[in-house]
Length: 113
Image (cartoon, rainbow, N blue to C red; front, side, top):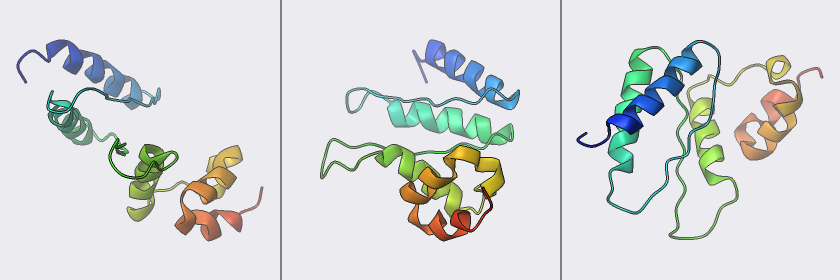
């Protein structure tokens, strides 16, 4: 990870913030081949080792454009792992989760508002 100290430090501070209850979203963008995937793998491995739940989704400039693809991928990974919070914890986000992640539609729809 030569030359990535600043990026690793910045992302490390965000992970530390998430551990203390200040979650966030991070979008890594750039030209192909500059090490985005490697950087993300390093940060995710460190975060997972610290017990942080990391959601991961990717966008692509190739193929059809899919609205909210990175967010839907991230939510699907959470759903597949069975880690989606209950409907009452989702509050006002419950309905949109059911639209973005169809497999969660029935599960969250039956919860009391």
